[in-house]
Length: 181
Length: 181
Image (cartoon, rainbow over all chains, first blue to last red; front, side, top):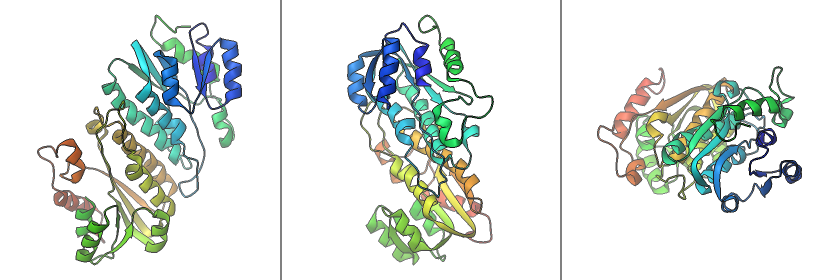
């Protein structure tokens, strides 16, 4: 999703961050973007200077019953967003866009930590809207999208959007003047 | 809240756990209860054998803007509940009661991590209901209660219930036959 969203913003001054360095480098080369590793959020916030638009598309999923061991999905689904909001500095009119999930679609067996971490993000954003008054927040709840996130679940469901379709829909809805690719 | 709830269950076979060992010991002596430190959830689950009723009243709060450093409130507000659900074993008809919060009352500046951790708990419970079919789940959203949780916030608001009033209301609503103190 991050790649598809960034590609919609070709021509803008872009900073990309993520966990897969090889994919980041390849994407950055094709978009003329700069990159920064995902591990160092505070340093990233210093490096990128003032932000017009943050798109937080990081996400992790793993199917595990509550009775079973699981990766901690909060790092990608919650804490990354939290520390960006802590450290980023914004241009006037700055906007922040987060990818959420419909609670009723994810409250299924095996998705305990996923549902919890996505709910945590939404709870945080409700407060962030009230604290960071100079930033416009947008939470996008997507239907299913055919991304690698579905791989551990046996693939995306039928009717899932392609990442490109989803990204085009999202970016086209952002208010003009900027970013209406 | 934990003390008040436990006191409503005088006469039952009680296991108490919490972070304040001195308070635990004093309460256990007055209720004839057994105690277990809060840090070792898996060992606790082994020690207590089969559960009829879990009451999860642990909670932490700190007022900090997202831009400010904060304690990680997820340990008490989320992970304790998660690991109990992972490890506890239940008697038939087992029940699990959690203290939640009204999202609209906590979505205020300074409560980012509190709102997020409480939302995470509710997201987890939606899935837990579907995974742990032999357990009845109950999420209690209380109005304000005069507990030490309010100390860092300058005290409880006017009209707040006493812990004893709140505990009596909660326990009296649990279905008979057991625990209707």
